[in-house]
Length: 185
Image: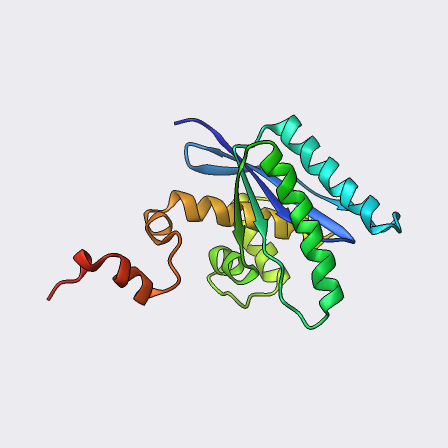
């Protein structure tokens, strides 16, 4: 079985979290977990350029096989959502330019995959990552751990028989509608 490297991204216009997770014999191992600080740059387009350049650099250096990104959280501030959507789009464009498969996960799905609780807070996610991946040092920013959680979530979703079977399904009703042969009467 070939090693896999997953690039996980937590998009942002102030900080972009990124993490690389190597999967060897189905065992995840952290290669890198950090943030790209964008606050020094005032121009939003310059920030977007920095995001694109960083994602391209990570792809070139580590040659990940998969790209996983957290979907924007829909809040009340429309301007923040637009900026976040642009940041996410630029990161996705860099991955697509490298011909990578892109998968997007909601924050709730990521938390559920890592902690078993879709409403877990960032510290709970960090503590589970610490246990699962035997990480010693807590990073300075949760954006980095969020990116790692996205990468690990992707690993869980694609390596689990349940995750593979459920891909593209919304709920149990959707599963039943698409798999009527599974129902016993």
